[in-house]
Image (cartoon, rainbow, N blue to C red):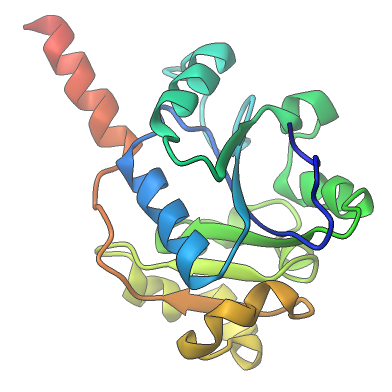
Length: 200
């Protein structure tokens, strides 16, 4: 249960549709636990991503159950908190979580592909000013992400990768870009593969 024994805990938040959850999500979470020295990573399964069509989106209960089968590490917690809070945008979810944090320190986790499209997110500047952010290398996206609007806007708030372990205790806006050998798999590819198998 989220929030139990959470005094002074460092929590990574990984949001998304998880349609479906896959090894890339797991790998990012494991890297975050180690390099950011987190106590837990929470997967915030979104009832409906505002930037994605409902067409082709598996039912929420199915995505939540699937995420729990993929999140095999005991410190990765799969959560339906966005559905329980009734929040639609990440900005609002973070505001609600931070208002009730009870000593928890949060850091938002996302891949470089999301940083590219981040200006499309509702209240993206507010998000950067609410919690520290860790961005993970993704093949083919990283150069564009680091040359994009968001990285440029907050260039002076980027911390060296060697200081990543202290990110969660820093005041927002603060962010780090983590280079690593990540799994290039995407949920889109997995859905396409599953569809092809269904037609074989």
